[in-house]
Length: 312
Image 1: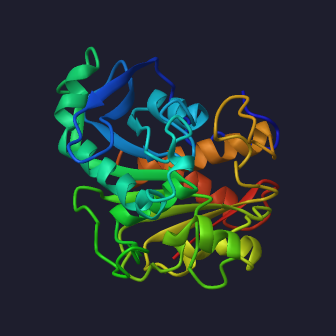
Image 2 (image 1 turned 180 degrees about the vertical axis):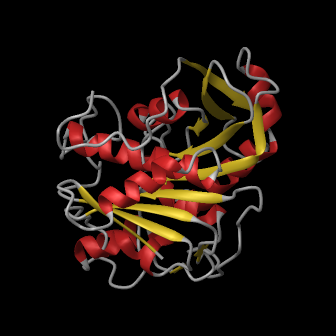
């Protein structure tokens, strides 16, 4: 049941889901094989994929409020544990840090190369997914990962070169509370996240939804909350921006049920993010247009208490 402050934009019924983990993909050249989790509805055919990249330090068990919601409404959601996860000893290995952003993109490419393997590992899923409809999504550091797959250029801190690592198999992106341009970074960001120094959004021309909290004060940029809107304002057309009123970095609680890092826990705010991201996924993959139109009608005017939606 929705709160009086929220609207159920999608109106599509939820279905039971199945989740399988870990599915271990061989990853030559990686420090360890790649563990993956797949969550999918137990019914339905031609199911689109969402490749979800976690934030720095998280893992394949995170973000259940989003993953469960998307999967229960018809999407196959794939999550990996990247090498920057706290489950690895990355914090003690400073030599690895400058290439973490690239390692993540390679993880996603490995997943794209082995979708058949992942399907076969989930009971009843084989033959029910649509490999031609794939959206990349991610939170925080994961938002950059999703962005690279659709054209974001990152200047490698080791080589000084911005290489195009986009993948034509990814049709669109959903970026949640993610990094902006490399201008006016803090000393903390320059030391701990050197991959943020050079980011070029101009080649990101595929459709995308950016979600930003207007209270998300990160210690990475001196520009304040406007920084996380850069993936929308600096990218090409075909983009939409959901600004979440009062939203901090966890956007009401997307990181997990009861996650300790959620500083702005709010069921209504979380429900807004769940619903708008779902309706966008349904819209961009061609599954359903009604929910997205309802969301735009409710949120574009700037009078909704929870957020504002704009497009270009």
